[in-house]
Each structure stands twice: as C-alpha cells, then as structure tokens.
Amino acid sequence: MDEEVLVVFLFFYIGVSLIIGAIGNKRKIGFGGAFFLSLLLSPIIGLIIVLFSKTKEEIDREIRILKTQREQKEHLERLVNQKSVSDITNELTNLKKLLDDGVLDKDEFDKMKRQIIDPNPISEYDEWWNRD
Image (cartoon, rainbow, N blue to C red; front, top):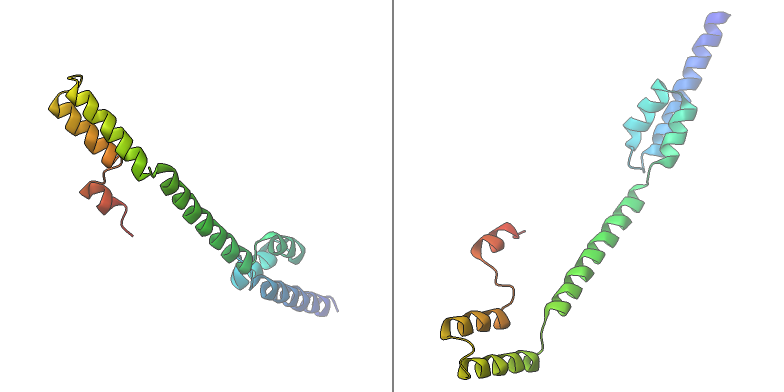
C-alpha cells in the first residue's frame, strides 16, 4: 500500500511539474527551466518562480521601447547640436572681424573656423568604432 501511494505521489509530482513547465514555456524561464525547478525545489516554488518571470512578449516590448528611446535620444542630441546657417554665418563674420582687427592670427582663425563649421569632426577611428 505504501509503495502504491509513493508511486501515485511521484506521478502527481511529475505531472504538476510538467504543467508548470508548460506554463513556463511562454516565459523567459522556458519549459526546461520551469520543469526542472519544479522537480528540484517543489511544484509550488517552481510555480512562484514561473509566475514572477517575464513573458517573452514583455521582454520583446521592453526591447522595442528601449530601441525607440535610444533612437529618440540620438535624434534629440542631433537637434541640440545643430546650429542654424545664420548662427554659423554670424560666428564666422565675428571671427573674420577679429582676424581683420589683428586679435587673431591666420592659424588661430583657421582653427576656430574649422571648429565652428564642424564642431564634432569624426575621425576614421570613430567611424570604425561606431560601425554596426
């Protein structure tokens, strides 16, 4: 009689673990992880772990949100760093006036002019490093 109860208990234990594995199939933990955690720890603890793990849809949604946020951040940074043509023209005019007045020499003028026209020059190393 005791052996029959033990066999029934084992079948029940494995069956419940299989059900919990099936629940975990659509979650990050997966079928195998949920099943083995249920077998090793207990079906109740396995179920709790499975229910607290994120679903694959939640993970995909979070990845899409992060990607969108990253794209928005890059776009905003580009907008913030852009200068209007009139701003650049005014800065170059003021710089030329400083050169004409003798405040700047030709080398300083050329260096500052390059900085105004292209404040963030990209070197070959930067292009290689940031490639996808």
